[in-house]
Amino acid sequence: MTGDPEPIGVEARKALEQELSDLHEERKTVAGTLRDSDEVGDRADQADQIQRVDQLNRLDERIERLEDRLRRADIGGPVPTDKVGVGTAVTVRFADGTTDTLHIGEIADARDPKLVTSDSPLGRALLGRTPGDTVSYEAPDGQATAVVISLGAPGDKG
Image (cartoon, rainbow, N blue to C red; front, side):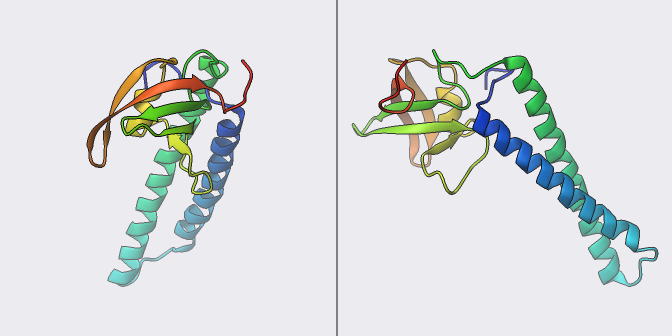
């Protein structure tokens, strides 16, 4: 990312807000198990307690990151239409000549095989780019390039 607040699309915001809600519920459940154990017994109980505390810390960190991301998105304003941003559909041509329309998103979604997260190597390379730009990124097989062909889903106007 550029360091500036990055805007996010409506669907990405909904997904982040849902994840945040789910994390708050999970945190409440985990915290409840800690309060229920007045006395830590044997080593297995102690290990279980330590594991729950670690889980609680990881949940707190993720909650903090999501809340910060949502605050920063408000500062960033709406998704840009003139350059690649979170929430943008972008058509790219890869070095092997294939083209594909990808969606730049916040969080991975197994239901959307065309989604590229904004913090992935390709996602980071595409952020802020415009049609005609060539990007380089680290792929599993080494350094790769792609050319931004257009913004918006195929058939979109504007």
